[in-house]
Image 1 (cartoon, helix red, strand yellow):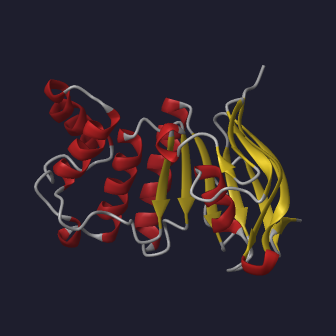
Image 2 (cartoon, rainbow, N blue to C red):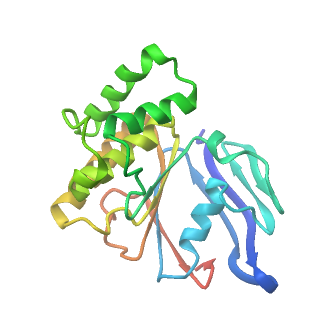
Length: 221
């Protein structure tokens, strides 16, 4: 029997003066799915990701992750760092002052990994995403593809079961896009990751996605 990784039930998000920017949105995404979320800029895609991640509480409705209540009307019931979620952004959002190794050591320390195990775990992650040998490099000295792979390693270091991708392929050329997509696809199958992939281009990841959802005006159409 399949397991539902993400369930949103009539999620609505309003901002100042009760202006609705999302919803109601109800979706179910099974464990191990790679779902494309497409639509024009400003249609609510990123807002939905933020609601799933716990960065913004729903005005009404609820978010469940693996059957556990994560957010409900006006509340974040499960803190973002406890959700098992990793996020990749268009510009990577890496910490510019930290080397690749230090980035992963920091995340592993926050997770409570024993000090004696952190360096070997960080090295494994860098090797997994093809960055072995670049431990001492800072984000500003990495190519766009390398920076996104470091962002992916950082997400995996947080013990993510769900990856939320907010147009992470935007700054990459076609060859680098294909490489990162292949890597994501391999990791998804190996680790049974659930992926929600926001893009304005439906063709961007069709070959690796299970299905496509389209948003318009804050709702799924």
